[in-house]
Length: 257
Image (cartoon, rainbow, N blue to C red; front, side, top):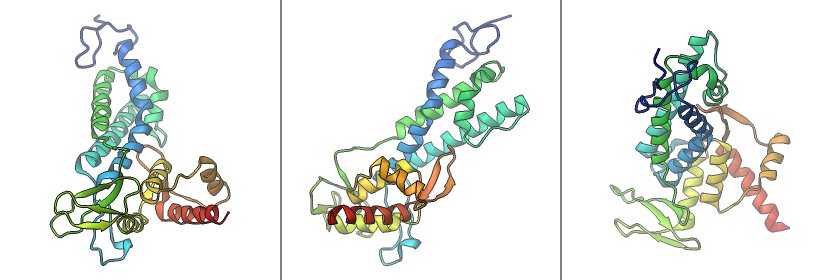
């Protein structure tokens, strides 16, 4: 009986007799699954950070939407579908159903996965999805996102230096008020459901407010912020409009004090 790893590219590595993948693949898979929450958080931040908030400027914010950067959106979809498919396959093999969060369930089921003859295929698929997600993350921290240029046919994403009052489109050179552009984005984003990390990042990115973790916990325990659903990684989702309103109220109390 051969005891070589079944993960593509690792066929020269020996594996334990009771597993179908080598010890290195088990460790790599454990690390990849542990990074999933980080990846989902940072992909959503990337989508918010760089992309155009669509819709006609004359419409109400409820009629606008965030137009996602194609490669980041695709990477998120591939990561989510790959993890769900892997959990589906393994749970069917084990004759059970996996809980809501496929990444955490797979991480807790590494021994069962490694002992299945399809382990090499799943390791390879997850590895590629995680690698693809890391490549899609693009979040320069030194600039403030000032939104898209509103000149017809342009739409170039604009970055401003901290403290700038105005920003000029690098493509068509039209100048905008940084405060006005960011307020428009805040209002447009209000209709979206986001994770805690995404919400806090958007508040910092668009509103220049750093919400302490204790304040967030207080909003949750006092029933001021409610869960509106979960995403593909099993993370809780909150209405950004709710977070925006709480952040405005919190900042106003701080100024009054």
